[in-house]
Image (cartoon, rainbow, N blue to C red; front, top):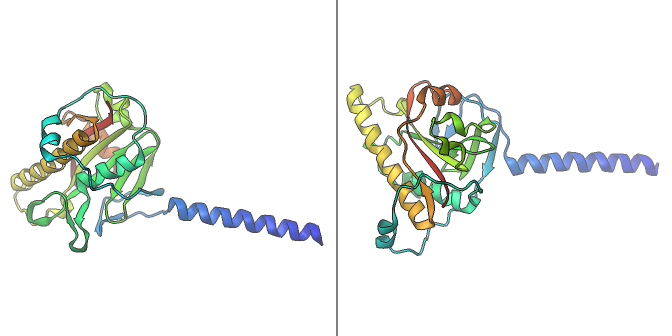
Length: 234
């Protein structure tokens, strides 16, 4: 009798541990991914990782941030602390007025067309600002496919900004759509630069990326990878 009780107890603990791990990682399986209330490409999310709260209040004068802003192409391989990564992503494309679903960067007619992908050694993730999570869409290290520039395989994080054209249907002319998508991308890129300046991180904005490989990996059907920012410790 005692043996049976011990077996039942062991099974209960294993089940409880599995459920706790599921809640911790937020594992989901979905063909349509909703990020910040908007449907993205037809991709598969295998895991959601909760980010720490972003440290919004960086006590650094704007003048100092602007003075120290620079492009750096040399990166150390060490990981960026998760608290810092969370703050970086918030600075790039987070909500500064969440009750209004308004972001730290402007966008043309508020279409908020960008999907922010984060490439690490573990996989390629989609940033969800509303839930403050990284949703894994492709497991494994795919940093090197972003570009032939070798520092992409060294930098621990690369941010790829993808304009989702499904959210820009109000622009009937392709040239107008592309103009506003490029303009909005510039706002995000500058915020990445400014946060990296404040946090003493290295980054560079790169337009010379392998868009065909990125689109294939991320299943981008109606959009365009505009820029990529490798980010790492100086």
